[in-house]
Amino acid sequence: MAEQKKQASQGQDDTILQQQFLRAVSSFEGIMLSQIDIKNRLADRLNYSIRTGLIILGMIAASILILLLTLSSQINRISGVVTEMNRDFTSVSEQMVAIKKSMTSIEKRVALLQEMDDQTRGMELEMASIGGDLATLHNSVERISSSLGGVRNNVDAISLIINQMDLEVYGMGQEMHRMGQPARSINRMIPLP
Image 1 (tube, one colour):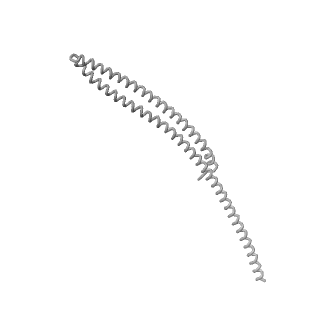
Image 2 (cartoon, rainbow, N blue to C red):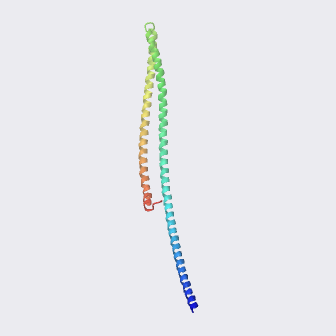
């Protein structure tokens, strides 16, 4: 009889142990399922964040491309104006050389005036030559004046181009700030570690 009680007690203990084991297995299964669900949610959120980041990076890349294309076109225009200015400066330099030659010639001829007593006829011829050199000098000065007018026009054109570039760069800065607003909002909603 005591043995039967022992066996009955042992059978009850086995039943309790099986029930506890089943509860533990179902709890473990619930924990595993909730972990899998959390991982799936995290993976979905990560995929959403990656897609959003790729879209934002694409918009930034497009903005940078537009900025580079704008700057490239402006640089080409500035380069053309600078090339034209360089040509004008070369012309001015050549005309300055001609003026220097004329001044040297004038200095030599003026030195001959010291012998005025002996060379009156020669002086008249030299004065005629000096008059021709002065006419050449006058023409050179007029050419320099017109070249400087062209240089002034080119500088004005460069100033207008730079003003336009400033406005475009300011507009791009505003656009970049506006385009960055969604990224800042997303960062506030989903802070990345």
